[in-house]
Image (cartoon, rainbow, N blue to C red; front, side):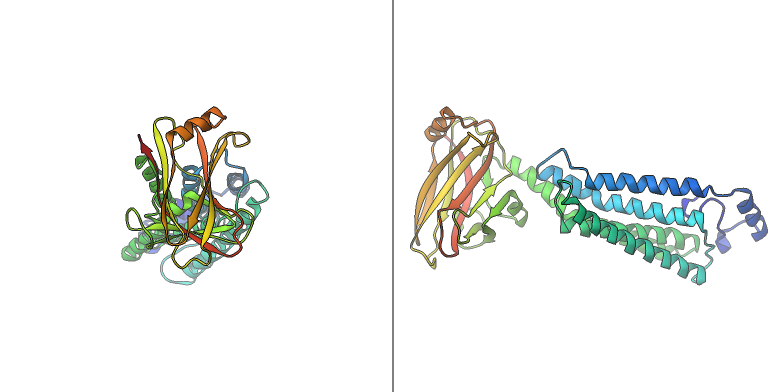
Length: 352
């Protein structure tokens, strides 16, 4: 039995081996339990809403990327459940590109537009339940819906002996899923690279690497100017304020051992200011008392290698900094009065 046909309730022209009267007798002898189908749809919808609104107990980029991978299959499954259930409740007999097939396309349009709207509404609702709204998630939901419709239509045209069109539908569905998974797969790849490249912390060689950082009163971009390692470096645009900063939130957290911390920094030649005060903060998972900062003066046009030595780390540890779990690295500027760019590159721990 094929889920597409809602039991033996559809006839598909040449593919049907039973006379129409015999097929019709089977329809009458196997009635569909409408209440059961509606309850199944309702339960599925409730489970989807819970999955989208309940706060995720895991944090970090890997957990976020895995969650992003789920969106397209989740909405694809919901779309197929709706279309298959609709077919069971109101079966269509397809034998070609006729009125019944046009009805099928209309059903796909109704289901697709409704679920796309539902996905967008859920993204807005998430902000009220301790989760963040994401444009990528809304796009992934839409691609999942589109992929499911392509699969469903592929099953329909298969019954109509349109094999070439069926393959095209399946290839389209595959393409939609791949589009939805590009960003989370790149994120997971960067998570793996981050651990493999330790003790290098950041080098800005890929756009995805920018997701390791959080910006507060500032912006961060990749640049091929003032590079000290590799092909790209980073440029921080500190906006006017008390303490604009960028924070690295993703890296290997255990810094115990004989390490110096180093980062290359430069106030560019075309900077609107001749001097700037840069502050590096190292914050552990007990951020209320585990914090250390280093203040550095930058001069326009002079490249500087900022170093925090092993001895300074040991002094930090004596004052409560937990080197086994460094949680954040802040790079901030003290009270810039104009937008100020600082080039940075090659954040790393250097074994001694």
